[in-house]
Image (tube, rainbow, N blue to C red; front, side):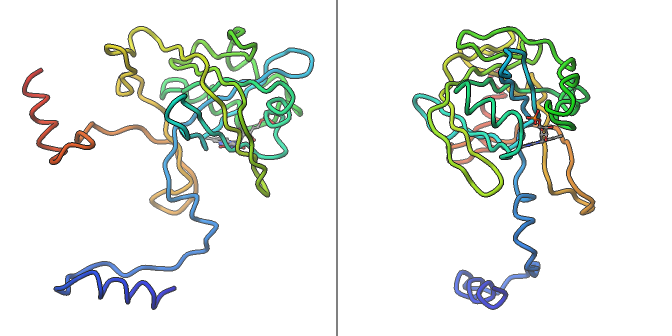
Length: 221
Ligand SMILES: Cc1cc2nc3c(=O)[nH]c(=O)nc-3n(C[C@H](O)[C@H](O)[C@H](O)COP(=O)(O)O)c2cc1C
């Protein structure tokens, strides 16, 4: 691995430039390379009561209709509930609600159903509970799932998107008004996982000069 990286650097650069050397880490730490939005996934238990779990491994995975994928441990109650009910909601938490978001991620609803007092839920249109007090609620219908050795990737079609009024700009979500709670397994001092927050907007994607385009837009405001 080490020698392969060195060869790549030599062929990519005409002029030798200074660059940091690389370390090969245990591949298990690859999950530390990415930063995710911390969400609360709400599902219905067999008796109809709600259960919630913190799920940070969440991403869009189809553009139209919008599908989102969540990777849920095979042993979680959330996993069992989604397989049975075929519906769930993904709710985006923000910094101010960090304590409650964290609370539903510490213990399983199997061991302590009482954890679910952290949030009030209401029934969504598709039957899955939604956490209306969180600013973004996505009601999802299960379209597919992939069983991996430790986690199941559930792919849900977003059938209804509800967003707090004051977090909407035009027809879209203004994510900077939400202050989403971010999560990563990679932390600067190597001590473990961390919650973090979004920094300032720095550019406009797909523009030829992202920073210049942003300055242009801001000058117009
Ligand atoms: C910040 C944070 C992020 C988490 N992300 C995930 C995740 O992406 N996937 C997962 O399976 N568990 C994740 N968990 C763990 C579950 O939330 C936790 O095990 C929970 O107790 C499962 O509850 P359940 O058995 O009631 O479904 C996370 C926990 C925390 C605190």
